[in-house]
Structures are given as C-alpha cells and as structure tokens.
Length: 486
Image (cartoon, rainbow, N blue to C red; front, side):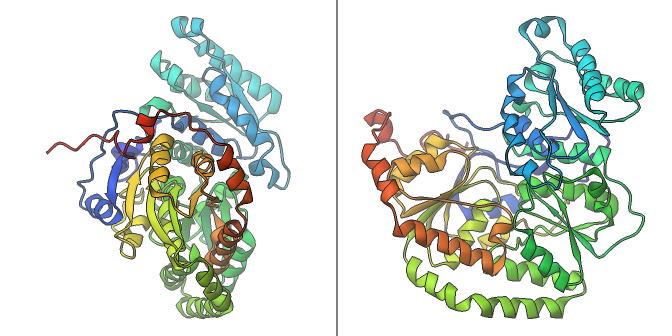
C-alpha cells in the first residue's frame, strides 16, 4: 500500500507497517510470522515509562537549517529539547546555531477555552523574530485531547505570512511506538522541502541522526564513482531539495529512515536499500554486493570487499581470540538490536538474548525485499528475542537472570541497571561508527578494553542496594506479558 502523502497526518506505524512493541520468543519465529502477516502485538499487564513520538519528531525537525518549530503544547513537552542547543546535532554543522523552538504553553485554562489564538500569536512571533524560510507547527497530546483544529490555523497562517509552514501531528498517545515520531518528521519534510529532480546525479542519500564518521563512507562511494548526500540533523533546505536527484537511498536503520526513504522512492524513484545495512564485516559485504551492481560497479565492489577483508583479517582474528566464549545481552532500538547481534557473533561472542524496542515486519517502500532483521534471522534464528518499548524493569529482570559478561545498550537507561548489577555496559554506537570492517574492529577493541578493566563496575556494584522487594526480584522477566488468545 502506497504512502498517503496528501493527508495532513501520517498514519501510525502500528496500522501502516504492522509494527509491534510486545513479543517474546525467537528471532526466527518473529521474522517468519511477520513475513506471513500474522504477527500480533501482545499485551502487558504492567508497563514502565517509555519514550514519546513528540520528542523524536521535534529532535529531527529542530536541526533543519533556516527553520523554526512552533510547538502547540504545554511548555514541558518541549523543555527537553534545550539539549539540542549544545549536543552534536547543532555542533557538527558548519554554522552552528541554537535550537529555535517556540511553545504556545497550553495551560489548564486553555484546555477549557481553547488555545488557537495563542497558536496564531506564537507563529507570528516566531516569524517576526527569525524571518525563517520554514515554520514547522507540531501538535501534542493536550492539543489533540481538547480537539484543537491546528491544521486549519496552519493553512490560515500560510496565507497570512506567505511562507512555507509545515505540519507535524505528533500526539504521543496515538502511537505506542516512539519511532512514529520519525515518520511525522519524514511526512513534514516531504510536504515542505522535497523537490522534483531537474536531473539525476551520481549521488546516494544517507538518512540518519548525524553524519559522524562520514569520512570512510565518502571515500568508499568515491571509489564507486558516487557522492553521498547526508540527510541528518544539520541538513539544509537546499540539501533536502537535492535528495530527489539521487538514484539510491540507505539509512542508519529502518526505524528512522523508513518513511522519508519510502516517500523518495514513491515520488521520485529513488531506490531504497533496506535489507542489508553496512555494519560489521558481513553487513558491509552484503550491502556492497547489493548496491554495487545497482550502481554499475559490481566488480569494483568485489575489489573493495577483498581489500577490506585482507586489511583487518589479522586484528579481527586477535579480537576473536580475546572475546571468544564471552556472553552478551543486546538492548537496542530496531533494527540496531539485530545488527549488533550479528556483529557480536562475528567477534565470537555468544548472544544470550536480544531485546528490540520495537519491530517493523516491513518498511515504507512496500518492497517484497525483507527488512534487515529478517535477513539476519537466517544467520542466527536461534537467538532468544523479545520486543519492548524500553521496558526497563523487564530488562532489569532479564539481566539479573542471565548474568551476561557484558551488555550492549544505548541512551535509554538499561545500561545503568546493568552496571548496578556488576555487568559492564558497552555503548551500541549508532550510524557510521560501526561501518564495515573498520567499525567491527573498533567495536571489538572497545569491548576488549572494557572487559580488561572492570574496576569502576565492580565498585558501583559493591555499593548497590536493590530498591525492589524480594518478591519482585524473584519474578520471571516476562511475567507481565499476557498469553495470546488460543
């Protein structure tokens, strides 16, 4: 089913892709049921706090140059975004700027009498202060609950100010999958700044949060006769406008790149490569063998593979000797959870369990080609797998039961509990830092170095006292998942 790009609001990921946030079983079973269209979302009788679609949409829109966000919400909804004035998303830009976001500050009174006049005044204030090329108006749970017709004000203010005003409907309660915020970002960008190509170029799009680690990617595609256009947290309007001139797109993961890449393929025929991501040695080889022939560079791709394999063979074997037999648990967003599972196996590590924060059985280009997790399932179908939307306490019980040698997690809080339990936590870096054999070796070094010096982890564990009751500590990890009917 094609994307509905004319509707002001993006269809939620659960309905559009059949995505889930609750599962426990094996990767083989999950992938097979997803491909056959019979993967149902299970339920939990108890959940812990998760993340929100609203934040994830705004965190990407806020990086687009020459734009301003007007957030129709209580001011707390946007308060966390001050982080983006000092983090890598703005610093990596050539001309860094502070994040520019206005909140309409919906109050209790506004929930009774309405706040559309506030919205109009805030849009005017944003325009007068910055004279932006684009204003993105975002919605919130509160705006949706009181039934505010935000899109009518967007259309009204477009006519009044004579500039592009985009609309991002990101009411957090409408989707349990926080990655739906990435879809709202992609929908808003498609509606406002994508342009039809004047001509096609030897250019490939890369969609991600940031372009950190791009040097080796630029060098790789230069050897293939192509340049890379980075659609990331510091991309300009002009660069988004050139995205349709590319002949192919790949992304850091399906969760973040799916909607925008699907729109580029649907509107402008830009091929989306979704099955193999170029992480680790195996992913790198499969990705090049898929995209190389498409770019007319099959022979050159094989030469690059042979050269990279030879260059890192000795150090990779040394790392396998150091890490062979170690055990790990992976706790990451989709589809990085499964990419890192494969990478760890390349390093000789035994993965006891993989947790993905959601799972997409298909992506937005509606291709018959399998998603990355399905392709990986062919190699490690036996890996126990669960899916949860950052259910930290479920993951805590899992780590307490399995006691792996280390954990691979990221910025979602699971690593903190691992260290309290005396388990080293390795950051699962996202994006180009794990690109190819070089990324595989660098990640292997990070694990080996961490395991060689666990002094910090041991000291933290020695001072940890569990805040939970003995009854809770004795629970099985997946006690809250209700059995499927039948």
